[in-house]
Length: 420
Ligand code: UD1
Image 1 (cartoon, protein in one colour):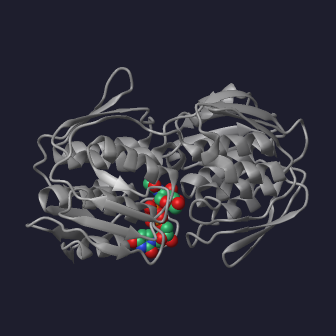
Image 2 (cartoon, rainbow, N blue to C red):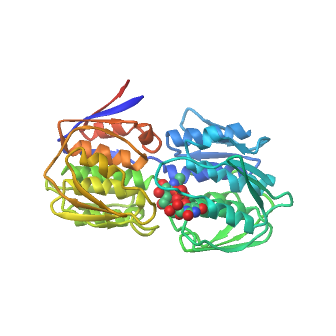
Image 3 (cartoon, rainbow, N blue to C red):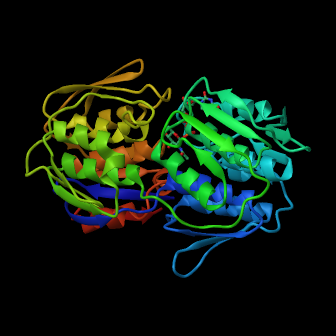
């Protein structure tokens, strides 16, 4: 099993290029099941979760391959298996995203109840309810969601009780091939939803309203193959920006649309960071100064992203002043705080909030990653700690960050991967 060894204390300084977005690429890969034609996807990141989704597509019969140039091609022609098995689904919650496309195109899908990060109970009731509202018969048998719609799905007017990214994605994919018009209300407005709609539209889907809380979809009889480039990963970029701020350093990130990080950049400005932006780059410079503590409350987009909460918790542990970080999207997502306390951080957990008193420094320690973004926050803590930090169970980080140690080495960090 791999671990990361970090010797903290270096100010990060340098330039990186953003990878393609994991959370956009996953639903886009699932959406390729909606057509029998081949789809070509550029800028699909090289990540464990992406490999899992490609293996899942191949196991269904839709051959998914990455060519020498890094372009992913999915041949949708020969799907004959309609079951997403437990062994694949347990490692990645986003496997649930094949449910809507399989059901809409073939009238049949069996998907194991998902696993993924251990951040609360994370039900999939809304994915199921919206598909039932479209006419599917959904049963739960032996740990599997078994959904049938032998006569196809029908358009629906559906309001989500809770804003759900994955639920919105499953619904919009299914509605694209349903008979008639669907109006989906209180949907997620995340940029990754806009990217998925962009791909579906390139396949011939008729959708309006992406980026607002209502999506209207005119179902079509068939979709065609498409060539599409996945958007940049705003969470990866946000993580490197916070890492640079925490180490009092500087980083320029290229290949990113600054607007999709505006809330994160505003928070970073409050820490004292000097941020400049161009059409497709962001530059952050702490000018050697210690960051100031900032309060954070997570919310669905356009609010502060839950996927950046752990990284800001890490920054606040060494910032000047006290702060409160509140998690409202997921339960049980402050687990990184316990590991940071082992590094000398002063954090008090009170329900869904962490109260943090900034220290001048942390001390390196052996720590354990508990989920994807928590792992990233421990890397940031290790970068600002004195001495050596060893992070175990980093398979979590490999699910969502392409070559994190290589990128941080480029910025001057003393970080290496070891296999034990
Ligand atoms: C996606 C992202 C994840 C991010 C999250 C919130 C991907 C692959 N993952 O996860 O990185 O942290 O959005 O921005 O894109 N819920 C229900 N019932 C449901 C579905 C969700 O109650 O049927 C609840 C969840 O428990 C959670 C909240 O809704 O409390 C938001 O979850 P959701 O937006 O669905 O997250 P994911 O799509 O799993």
